[in-house]
Image (cartoon, rainbow, N blue to C red; front, side, top):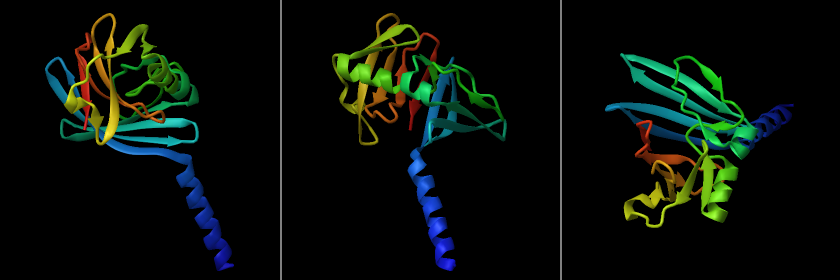
Length: 179
């Protein structure tokens, strides 16, 4: 009987590990109008949902929340969410939005065509790469430049999670770096 219970628990644990394809922790450093905010972010994927669970120390209190994105967001999203985090809120983003990464179809377009469209703006692979920005934590990155406003983004070359690890020159004046 003990063996059956142990085997059952092992199968349950193995199933949980298999279902969690992505489990990564980062620090997002946002800069907005001269202010800096450091967000601790845990990104997990379970079944068909990616969760960006964030927390920040603000006014001596730990605030936290979550952005949830389903299969359609992850596969075919075409717009970045610029929704400001709200303490205690779990936000399910609209099906066309992603937070902090581009969709897998946008990544595929970038890899195959050298460009993708997000928020109605075309981003093209930059002609020249700066040596220090070709990798992020040992992972290859792709530098893109917006056609219209010259926003720069550096994206981790990873189909499972094409994380935008750095932005600069954003006309909204919201830039970030992931550490």
